[in-house]
Length: 113
Length: 216
Image (cartoon, rainbow over all chains, first blue to last red; front, side):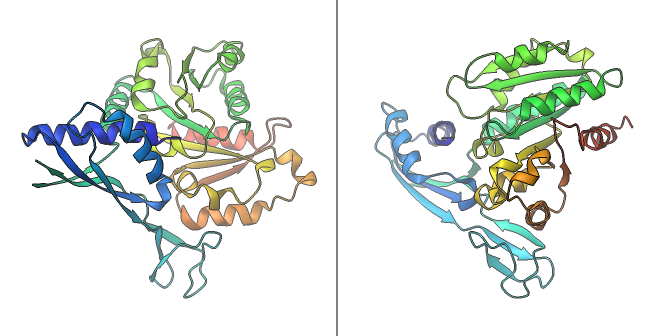
């Protein structure tokens, strides 16, 4: 649902970067998306296809790097990936954990001509 | 040619949220972003909070909904300044929508602004609006598994109000397990079990809020 606003924001950012670089065409956009954000790549692609029409980014390939939700145990300090319905540390079973990854939502790079 | 960007997609929203924040700070307004799923009791919590703050602090309200002004009309009866934002389909408030409502509020005469976000447990978590704190209202009929389904929202909340605790005898909702799950991933969170029907717990929430505003 939030993908429309997020895709518009991403496109604005990409077009600004491309313009600053004097590029005429954006060929590829490399995105980093944390699993925890709930941003669905398929929806971003859908919105991107119509929002980018008539802009230098029209037809650009979207590449999604998905970052799993990661946590560090506050007790044994080991890192692990968060299970869907189990938020305890697999090493010491503590449930006192700090989220260390999965909230990412950024444009890593773009390829332009 | 590859250009390294490494920029937050929602950076533009965060910038506007920062401007809202400056405006709030210059008017000494404490801002609460109220988030929850539809029907969890956002409007009821706001009404109960207003009632208990009468004479203690000056409250204003922003009502965010996809459409209609039903909530703003209900809040208006409490005799506080209220502005309705209709997002027209967007599933959350963002910083610029919030900014557009601020011109219609007498910020100078408001100490506490309660902003009711659109009912949704996903999208509002991503969009800062310039708030001081974010509260999440989770009602008992929704079930105690919600943190696992909407981890970002529970991770981002400063306060969780467990609403409709008067219904606990009829539901399989484990308050202790729910509380432990949230505290496991969110060490800063304050949790208050409340009922807007019986009034239980509301005083504790309101007195914490006044303390957080520096007014207790």
